[in-house]
Amino acid sequence: MTTTGQPVAVELESPPPPGPAQPPPRRRFGSIRLRGTLTAAVFLAPALITFLLFKFIPMGRAIQMSFHEVRPYLGDVWVGFDNYTRLLSEAEFLTAVWQTVILAVGQTAGSLIVGIVLALLLEGSARHLWIIRTAVFLPTVVALAVVAEVWRVLYYPGEAGVINSLIGWFGLGPSEFLNSSDTSLWSVMAVGVWRGAPYDMMIILAGLAGVDRTLYEASAVDGASIRQRLWHVTLPALRPVFAILITLAAIRGLRVFTEIFLLTNGGPNGSTEVIMTLIYKLGLERSELGIAAAGSVILLLATIALTLAVQIARRGRPSRKAKR
Image (cartoon, rainbow, N blue to C red; front, side, top):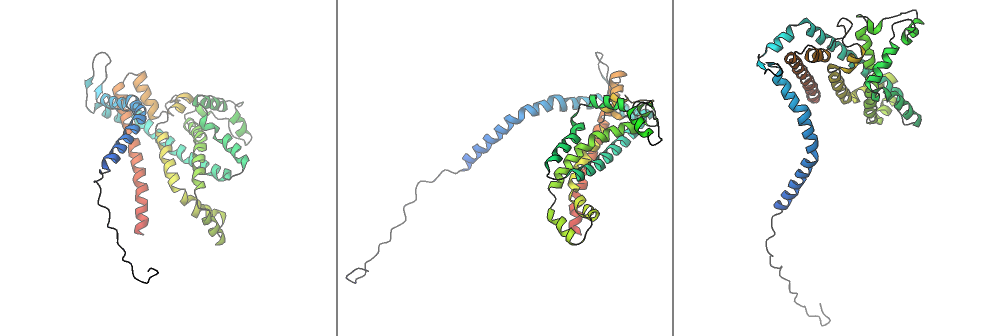
């Protein structure tokens, strides 16, 4: 409206004419994606080449050797599955498998139980706990050669030995420990538990940090005791952590070599012989490289089967819960 009271026609502006068509952005996004892929490939290339040269190519060569009678400088002879048949029919190999399983189960269970106890005792945010955790974790980072030498001193079979002196206070011993066929495997297992428990403790501590604290408060309000909170809250929350630890510890137990080699070298009388030490002796001491390669392939298949079994068990558990 104007001051004269007559309406004024308002002219609506027409929309601007459409401009030239913009190029599709796909090409630009595609170039960015290609650049990112190339960058990732460049950074991954050293690690992939290293794995290829020192892991996958030797693995393929071992599989090839397991089907041959390996004769250096004379040419290999194809024997099919004879190496596997001979190995699986030898009592020495079956004994080594059984002792490897016992050692793996014992070390896995022992390390897990001791690790849980240590984690529950050392959980918290107090500063002094970091010092204690560091001290407890030291056995994991110490070189195995040093660990073996220390335990050989501790396991001294005479009455003057450190552990024999300790158990002597309770009227026990002296024990032969590593020098007796009856106690050597258990003595090696104790060293494995002592070295593996701190590693499990650190993983469990990380898992405890992710447990919902309100569950503890709610269970305390409901009158749950400490044992009930531990059983119904803490342990179920740590189930994924246990699955990872059991997998890693079992694989570590199946592939144990250095501790056995340094402490007993499979003795006395083969009482601590495991698969890895037997493969070492077959290949490098008896020059039966084909049979040793067959043993390595069997151990590889056992490790893969164990890993797949744990993964399938982990994936099947949520589906069973959903059905309920």
